[in-house]
Length: 363
Image (tube, rainbow, N blue to C red; front, side, top):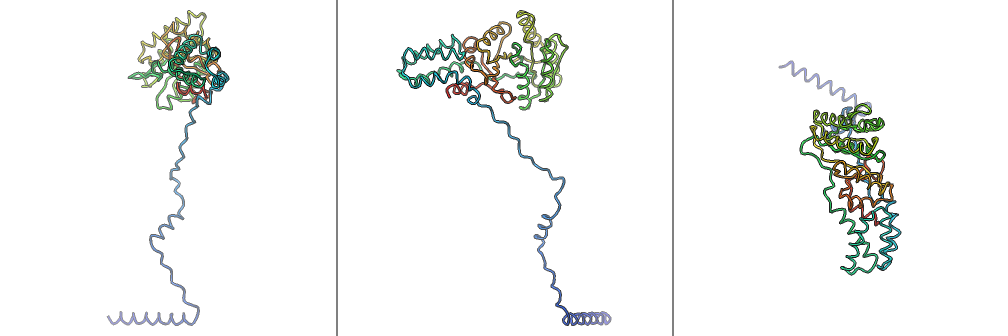
């Protein structure tokens, strides 16, 4: 006990001596500033190097804007705008009807569809007491929409059980293969698995083009030998789709054989064989080039004689002054236009919208 007391006294003396020495010299050092624990932790975290494993979140990629009919139907609108502009300022008389009839036929609405429109408009003018051109054009717009909406559903149909099969028919050069590629990309973007069938075995370029589209959008492409049996290629594609659980088969077909009779018989065979496969054919889509006008209507009539057409894909509508073919197809064949091409990109193949289409003609 005595030893601990003596040791403490010794330490106190030494401390006093050091303190005395400090007062005689420089000023004693400033004691360290105490930093709160929370502040110290925050500073340490801010100065710490970034963690290399931290995930960088990229901003979402926005989808390209949907093409508007009004922006893409300039040529078709120009075909009608001159007459429509004059009619807005005129009273309704015999000359009015002549000018309107000529404008509609010139836009490839077709004689039968034009006659039907004029007769119904004349009935409305009399019944409703319409007197000026503005009222007449409003009535015309209503009648146009009415004729295009009194038709079966325009949505593409899917089978209750996969795979669904869509067949594409049409003459060479209308954009059949490109349409399949664009539509395949859209369906894949929507989450479906797609198999493309290169059923146009008479053109090597068609199979190569379809293969390129399949590679680009992530679809499987089933091909056969050049000059081989198109029905066999399509049947194999359907069986392959069923085996791998794919949702949709998009089948290309030939657009030209030695004679029209051969072509149509080949299409009948394709349909029969496709129906025997593991999938369900819900659509037979006729692809038409809008720039061909009334010639497209003749093609449509020929194809409907061979197979039951469920809908029309109208390509190059943005580059045509003959958009009235939509009414002729509806009036003469009762077939709905389901898709239209409004440009070159895949996003420019869009569902046909009656209101947008008709409004664009009057814009």
